[in-house]
Each structure stands twice: as C-alpha cells, then as structure tokens.
Image 1 (cartoon, rainbow, N blue to C red):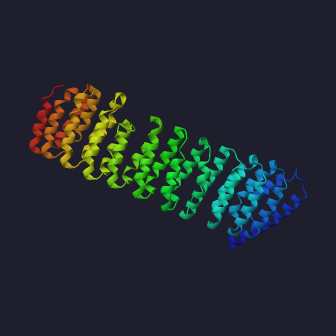
Image 2: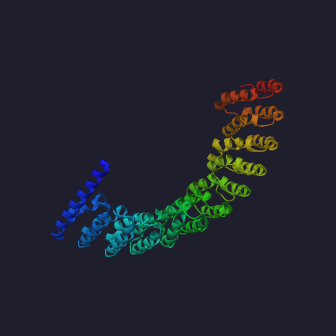
Image 3: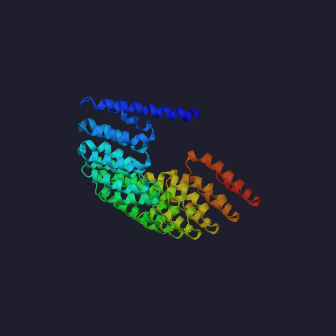
Amino acid sequence: MHANNLGRQTKERASIEFDGVLDGIRQLNAELRPQPLERLVPQVGALRENTRTAAFNELLAEIRRLPALQGAPLLEGLVRQIQKLPIGTRKASFESVSRAVAELSPTDRIGTLEALAEQVGKLEQDERVLAVESVIGQAEQLSGDQKAQVLIALARQCDKPPKYASAVFQCLRPAVAALPPEHRAEVAVELAVRLPKLLRSDRLAATVSIIEMTNGLPGTLASRVLATVATNLSTVPESKRSEVFGRVVHKVAQLSASERRAPISALERRLEYLPPGERLAAFRTLADPMIGLATRHLLWRLSFKIKYLPDVARGDAFDCLFDATRLLTGEEAGWPRPLDGLCGSIRNLLPDARSAAFDRVIGWVGQLPDDSAGSLLYALIHEVHELRETEQSQALDRIVANFERLPPSHRIEADQAFRGAVATLRAEDRQVGYALLRRFSW
C-alpha cells in the first residue's frame, strides 16, 4: 500500500512539474522552444494516466508550431508515446499525429511514418486496418527505399489475432507488389515470415502472391524470398502444399546454381510435411538431374529423407538417389558425403530390398576413382549388419573382393571396421568372415 501511494504521489508531482514547464514553453519563441520540448516528450508515460492524453495533445500543438526541421524529430518521439496513452484515446491521438505528419514534406516524414507504423499494433483491433491504410497512403510520396522501410514496419504488425493479420496482409499486398524490384524483396521476406500468423484459409493465396512478388527480382533477392516461403511450407493446408512446392521449384529452376542453394535446402527440409502420397514425386524432382537442382550436398541431405517416404516408395527413391549420385562429376563425385548418404539410406529400405540395393552400390565400385571407391567401401562395411543374417557373409565377401581398391590411407580404418562387422555375424558365419579377411594381404 505504501509503495502504491508513493508511486501515485510521484506521478502527481510529475504532472504538476510537466504543466509548469509546458506553461513556460508557451512563452518562448520558436527558436528557443525545441530544447525543453525534447525533455517533455519522453515524460508523457510518467504522468498520471488521466492526464496523459491532454499532455500529449498540448505537446502536439506546440510541436506543430515549429519549423519542420525542428518539429519532425520531436513528432517522431511523440508518436512513440501513443502506446502509453489510455487505450480508448489512442485512435484519436494516432489520427491527430497522422494529420500533422501529412503536413510534412516526404523527406521529413519518413521517421515519423515508421514510428506510426510501429504503433498500429497498440490500437484496438478494429481500429488497426484503417490505421494501416492511412500510413500506406502517406508513404506513397516517399522514395522506393523509404517506402519499403515503412512497409516493413507495417508488415511486422501482421500479428495475432489471425483475422487481423490477414486483413493487414491484404492492405499491404498491392503496395508491396508495386515497389521497384530492388526494394520489394526485403518487404516480401517480412510478409513471408508472417504467413503462419494469417487465417489458415488465407495462407495459400498469400503464399502464391509472395511467390509472384519475385517476378523481376534479381536472382539473389528472389532466392531469399523463395527460401522463406519454402521454410513456411508446413503452414499451408496439407492438401495445397504440393502446389506451393511446385511453384517454388519452378521459380528456383530459373536461378543460378549458387542462388538455388537456400530455397532448395528449405524445400528439402520440409519434404516430410507433404502429403505421404506426394513425397516421392517431390523427392524425384529435387534429385532429377534433368531438372538440374541436385548438388552433392542436396543428395547427401536427401538420403536422410527416404525414411519419411511410404514404405512402398522407398525403393524407387533409392534408385533415384543412386542414379543421381552416379551422375556427379569431378569434385562433386569425389566428395564422400553423397556416397556415405547413399550407403546409409540402405537401412531405410524394406528388408527384402536391402540386399539388391547393397549389390547395386558395390557393383559401382569398379567405375570409381580409388579415393571414391575407398569411401564407398568403408561406408558399405557399416551397413552389412542391416542386411538379413543369411546375406551378411556374402556381402562381406564382395567387400573383400574389392579391398585392392582401397588407397593406403583407408586400409587400417577399413580393416578395423571390417573386423567389427564380422563380430556381428551369426556364430557359424564369423570364421568365414575372418577367413575372408585373411584372403587379402596388405
């Protein structure tokens, strides 16, 4: 109770001092007025709540009497006090400041418009859309980069509840689409980040509109937007996700190899959010060499996605991954991760399919350079225990037959890995396994 009384007395004393300073300011001429106003503007929130709105309006009146060069920074500071006013008076205060901003030149209004945009979310929910439209209208006269900054501030107001967020998005969409390409991307990214905030029924249309905003963008900027859209693929209704996936792939295919990396990685990470029956088609799209999206890193990452496909589709996915990996050339082919991933994906196949996949991979060893062959054999050793018990010793036999392809740097590790694999065989097969190893002499 004592603390509450002390706080109330402090606010009453601040209000009295505020009124006294304000009376003094009114006696000053325009050249002397800004300095004490700078001290008063941040103090609005320290006043008694029932006096804040009146103080706000009096400060606004004083600021409007100043030349624009002195008044604009003070007006920006005053706008940031709107959130400290009683909720029922914020709309009127917002509108009063908006009229004052309209009197400024486009050059002087940029900071105040950004501040106004940040206050939209502090209004009552049913007041926010009109406030957004007001700020957008005042931003029309700004340069492209200045307008983009105001729209970014408004995009960040796409927040709860979803109905309000969707309404704000609809207000912003045509304004963002009309921006010059060099300024459009950053705002589009902000909108894409907020797709999960929208009404579920509005997310598909909003996502498509953001994808269309990449038209005419430089590749590096389009890549950022598409990567953000792909990251939010799971927020679109499940039945529509493949449609969005296809639209993003179509756009990504038009980018350079370096520009594709971010959006393709985002699509790969969201593959398991597609409807189960549509995942294999998406997997093939990413790995298909004819489409040209596959890189060694992507193929390695895709090898971990086979487990998210329906059981009956995993064999087809493995064949697709194998064919794509074989087509890697030069340094891409020599990089061990795609080979490790390919071998590791064998364990995610149905048991009946693993031996055939193992044989297919080891049959490729003879076509590889020694370093790549060594990486492949070493990875295969670790997959032997995933085969049926009756198939394991035969698999080890095939590995030993190719040991001469191992470069010296791989031999000690391969020998240790092989002995570990033999130890997991059935008791009756272990002696056979060790005999296989003795057949080869370093």
